[in-house]
Amino acid sequence: MIELKTPITDEDIDKLKAGDVIAISGQILTARDQAHKRILEQGAPCDIEGAVLFHAGPIIQEERSDSDEPKYNMVAVGPTTSMRMNPYQADVLDMGAKIVIGKGGMDDSVREALKRNNAVYVVATGGCAALYVDKVNGIKGVNWLDLGMPEAIWDLDVDSFGPLIVAMDSHGNSLYD
Image (cartoon, rainbow, N blue to C red; front, side, top):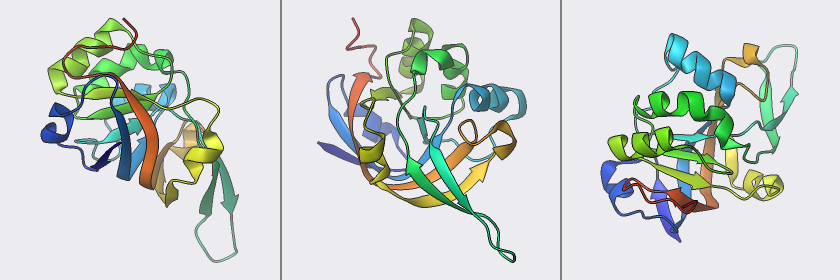
């Protein structure tokens, strides 16, 4: 397994090919359809240069006390179907994201954007939300909570998040061919 640390660099991406198994440590940002749409309309609420974007709608438990800001605990986090992000993903990749995590595959517009931006699409195994949550050290922040908990952008601190399989590499190769 290839271990990567965020932020992801061009050198990290250059060594990856379709079929490689990776794990990521550092920062991962969750982002689904509505977050992708808003990123394109308003700009990203955080730096996505070298970022890892995870197509996921995590299950979050909110704890509140009278004097504190809310504290969030992740209950589960697993991949959602990536093809829903096809209309937005190429443009978001053009903004600097380097790894997209999801499930199911993406279209040729994304394949071209991966090549153009030296980025990769990796798949997480569906049904393993309890496994993946064990790799999350904590939630560093949240953006656009007005979209709802599953659609908000959650800033996750992760350690050896994986296993993830490189499904579409930066050279145009795809396991879906």
